[in-house]
Length: 113
Image (cartoon, rainbow, N blue to C red; front, side, top):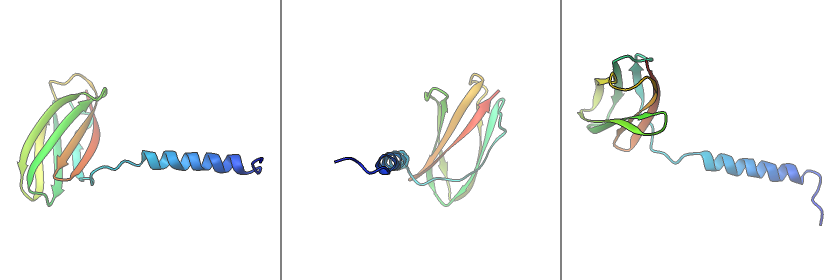
């Protein structure tokens, strides 16, 4: 039985819909980083965030190839958190800063000059 003239479009549309559904990450709730500056960074990166989480804060830095190049842990109290990360030992390039606290995380990119 031949397909109606509009069937290929329906089939493509359903493929696109499946791909879109497959791309939606089932990630942890996001954590808002107020600032991660300066961007680009030379020697230090300031991490400034506000949240109600009290406990361990994990800060990870990944290079452009996805390799973990830095890892830090902090004990944080509820509310405002401000710290400086040393990035002067990293070679120049594009990096991703991942911050995790409890079941929340966020990822921000930065450039090391």
